[in-house]
Image (tube, rainbow, N blue to C red; front, side):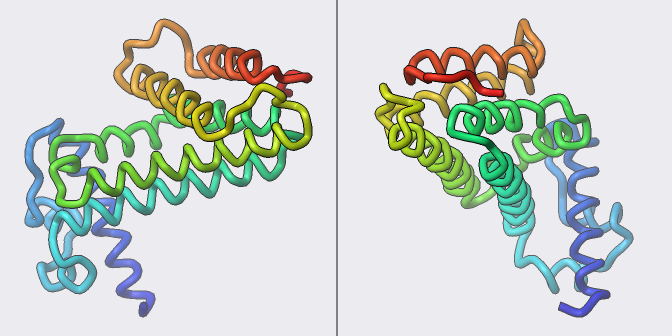
Amino acid sequence: MPPGQATERVRIINAAYRCLAAAEGAPVSITDILNEAGLSTRAFYRHFESKDALLLSMFRRDSTRVMTELRSFVASAAGPPEALGLLIGGMLRITSDERRRSRVLALSSGDATRARGYAEERARALADQESLIAEILKAGLADGSFPWADPEPDARSIRAALGQAFEDQMAGTARDSAATVAEQITGFALRALGASRPAH
């Protein structure tokens, strides 16, 4: 993609985030996004076939970035217990980072969730998280640090608890901070898995 077109694409995406945030749940049109970006209709259709395609591209890009970050945390860990703690903490830290928080809220707005294909993209992102957790649990079962682990079902349970905690933080209904909740979930998971050493 030529540099000028790459810049256009970024301008459209950034404008869409701003429009979704400002709309507070109200519908946002392609015209709204292009006015915000200062670009033409032709520029939009050079990159996206529809508004739904734009919104799915945004969701996919952000979820890929999150997974890349989580995988780097896991790769840097000294062992499975630390890897699990870093993954849980990393996910919940997103909720206390204002820029990332605003993007999550934009991509969970009614306009975004109504996009054709959104449910499938969200399911794929959650499955990727669950798969990474299962990888950690399998490694812990293999090296003895998680002797009680049943990787697939335990990964589903941990991801469900993490997902609920994430939603509570985003909604502002959590009683404790993201860091405290991360410690609570990690501690519970490590006890349930029979961890022989704590996460660091």
